[in-house]
Amino acid sequence: MKTIGLIGGMSWESTLSYYRIINQTVNERLGGLHSARMVLYSVEFDEIHRLQNAGEWQEAGAVLVRAARALQAAGADFLVLCTNTMHKVADVIERSVDLPLLHIADATARRVSETGVQKVGLLGTRFTMRESFYRSVLRDRHGLQVIVPGPVDIDVVDKAIFEELCHGRVLAPSAQRFQEIIRGLVSAGAEGVILGCTEISMLVGPADASVPVFDTMAIHATAAADLALHDSDGSPVDQ
Image 1: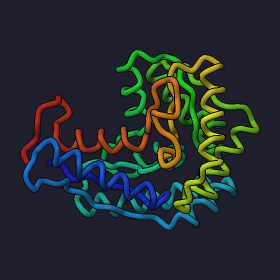
Image 2 (image 1 turned 30 degrees about the vertical axis):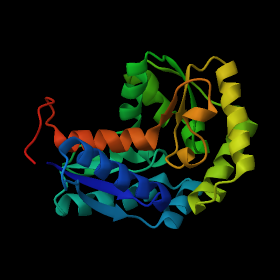
Image 3 (image 1 turned 90 degrees about the horizontal axis):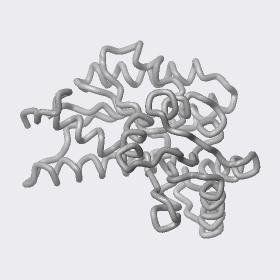
Image 4 (image 1 turned 120 degrees about the vertical axis):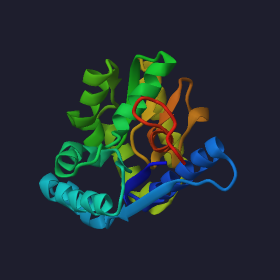
């Protein structure tokens, strides 16, 4: 079994779910008392969030590079960045270590494509929805069409993520508002909806939409467990 290197803490609420899902998946596959081999570097999220808001992405990337190097030194075989937004600096991390990084948008797009969905609505932080670093992976690598909410709804989603979900606050009015936004994306032609922030599944899920809902956190965590248990050619690795 390969050792997974988790860069977490963005937020720690969703990192908990990564740890749980990865271990559950490994145990379901292997049975008995099996669990995953993992090392975790949990960053201080306030520092990252302040750098995001200041537009200091190079400095934020440097924080994650230090985390990645620490995980490499700790024996990780590949990296999992437990957040969507900070994949803005994924290429910086990959250039700084000798480990592959399992990109969350690649894992998600593969799952979307398996269902036959071609046009997706994307929810996430304002950075993920407004900028191209994430949507370009879905579009250019995987041929998906991506639509995002309008400016007002983008602000609603972003505010709920940082002011509520990252604090573990799950509020019914926000859930209702997210459902309305999802309906708007469906009306605009979305055949599925990507929950492109690792906390959003705390608030809404498959029962809240008339189209398939793709939880990036769960998809990414499951893909990490799968990669830990298989070589690049798909053959199982030794436990």
